[in-house]
Length: 139
Ligand SMILES: [Zn+2]
Ligand SMILES: [Zn+2]
Ligand SMILES: [Zn+2]
Image (cartoon, rainbow, N blue to C red; front, side):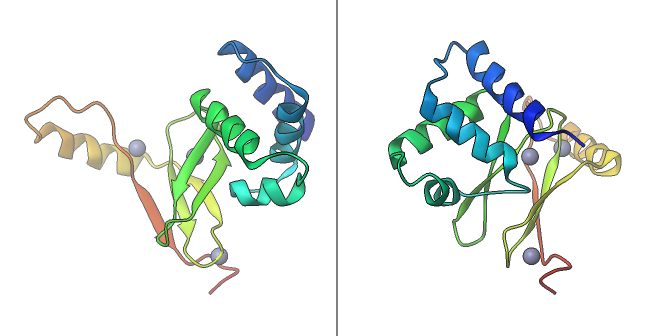
């Protein structure tokens, strides 16, 4: 289990690594993201930090996505949710009721996708696949 402090410094360092200035508001946003369990929306951050402008929140989230520390997931209804990225290739299990997002890693799935990719005549450079479900809390 990664502690909040580790997560926070990891995100701050990631921003510095891409040449970003880590301003006070950005640290506040990172602090909130680090303490949140599971996935969140930009609105969640906005509710927790009403003093910061929406633009600042969206910009910071975008930057964190650029560092590949944050995954962006789109729900069926178009809601965008974010979750921390562990850095390993993975897919998402998304609850269509509450928006809970879990990481899924499956050798079996990757094998099937590799086989499928061989039948595609063009050069395959990656894939994206989300699995929508109803989580145990919602069913
Ligand atoms: Zn992810
Ligand atoms: Zn759920
Ligand atoms: Zn995959």
